Length: 52
Image (cartoon, rainbow, N blue to C red):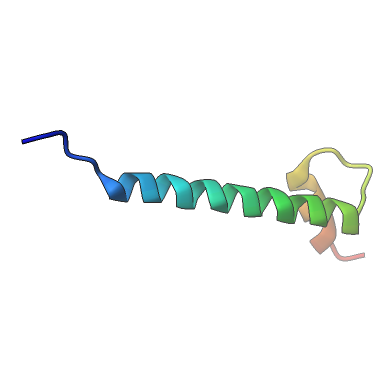
């Protein structure tokens, strides 16, 4: 027999890479929509939901 190629793992890697790219795109859009002085992304999110 020859070498066995696991197609599932390569599909999972590609799927994960796509997810990361979509996340990066969303993050850039979020940064443009709501620019803030705060550099920490977690703190930015918390500031969004704080009651004023």
